[in-house]
Amino acid sequence: MSKPCRAGGVSCSNLHALIIPSLADILKHMNLPETQVAIRKILIAIVSITLFYYTGKFLITQGISIYNKLNPPEIPAPEAKFGVLPKLKMASIPIEGNPNYILDTVNGRLPNYSDRFYVYEITQPQTTLLSEQKIKKLAEDLGFTQGYTKLSSSQFRWTDGINSRTFEANAITKSFKLTTDTNKLSSVITNTSSITTNDAISMTTNFIKSKSLFGTEDTESIRFIAYPAQILYGKVSEIGPGTRSYKLIKLNVYRDIIAREGSKTASEIRYKILGPDPKNSQANFYVTNDGGSFKFPNIDLNYWTINYENKSQYYVSDINLVWDAIKQGKGIISHIKSEQSDYFDPYENLDVGQIEIRDVYIALYEPRELTPYLQPIYVFEGQFETTKKLGELPKKGEIIIYYPAVRGDFVK
Image 1 (spheres, rainbow, N blue to C red):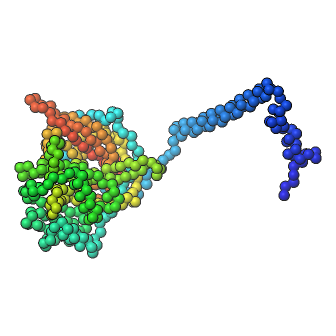
Image 2 (spheres, rainbow, N blue to C red):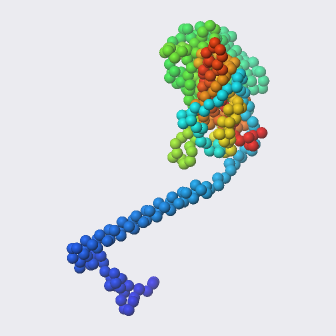
Image 3 (cartoon, helix red, strand yellow):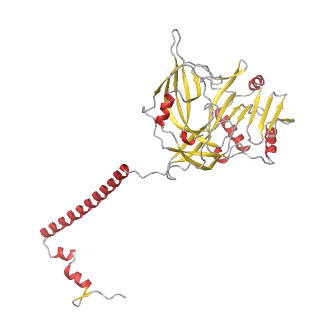
């Protein structure tokens, strides 16, 4: 136990009381004017100390902030744990001419991006004893009850001659294609009632979930774009915006990657997953109001399972350098359609004179062929105008251009 503090026989507490009288004792022996002066001095002292404290704190904080801006901490290089990545195989739609590129975004500038982005591993499909059984069960559920033709160890084909339908599927990759003859489809939809876009989306969503066509995470992040269609002169054609009653709808089904930048409470950012043609998704369904085999007369499903847990950051090319490459015509034209053309028409051979880019963003590229990784790409969307020629009005329309995002020294 420590000894009590004493000074000349007087305890420390008493000594403090003798030397520093309480504020109440001081004020008690003062008259009113002296009390007012004393209180005013005390208040001035309190305000001065408060101002000094917060001003000092502000200056220190600002000083640290300025120092960090002038001397930013060095950010470690991305781990790039997958090593050198395979080069993306992307085919460009050919055009004629030497177009002039104009940046026409909302603020007239390119967006700012980090110097790195995630690459995701794609789970390589494995053969199991149940793979063949699952494909056969899917064929049966779609109304193919007759025998099949085995095209290879994993590829199967079913034919429904009565209904002019064909179903071809791969037991390993689970990709499949269901097609119905256009003339047969025309006669079918003539006898069906109209279908709304919401009903088509609901039917397709239920089918995807009931057949476990997508993984759980993808099922929660899918989005739909609908194209009302009709059979006209023996081929599928787009219905104009003035029509409100549809008997056939093509649904493009897209999945997005949902990411959070920074903390767990940060807002979600959705990154599109796009295939070779951004206007024709890797999974698409034609939907009718038929209650039998023609509910989905055509399906084209190409789906790779993404391992969202196994990802790695890679350096991406500076957007300004990419824009320079785009202006030199080095981008991959993935979609180009004039205002006069139909959505279902093949691409035209266009002599393009000018391209105005109105939106730029990062997406992830999913090729048609199986690949080890899902890699980021820059996407440039805008409008084009064909070269002006004497006696002809120029055509206008939409154009989408891809460019690989991963820096070249990380790609084979």
